[in-house]
Figure (cartoon, rainbow, N blue to C red):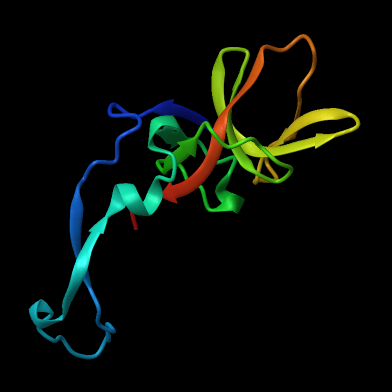
Length: 142
């Protein structure tokens, strides 16, 4: 099961703008890129639509690898977006955070893993359950 925890600077990507190059990268030869600086990329603007309701969380576990969310990924989560069927959400279930695909039907709410090793979690009235936000970006180191 994947668990998530807030990063120390939750809510702030704040690396600041970095340079963007308007060139095609080839694998055969190097070219000096200084002459091709196009603009600066502000990762906050690029990844955060609603700054006041957005935070980051770190993933632990492999239950969402089928959705390209590996162990160690950082999630950008927006609390202002209502979950829809199929959305990947961060939820608190009985005091623990988890990241799963959200499904609501006539039978209730289920949280679905993206790894066949794990079973869906049916949310019941006896559970303390809250969706904390919808995952809008996944940041991984390659």
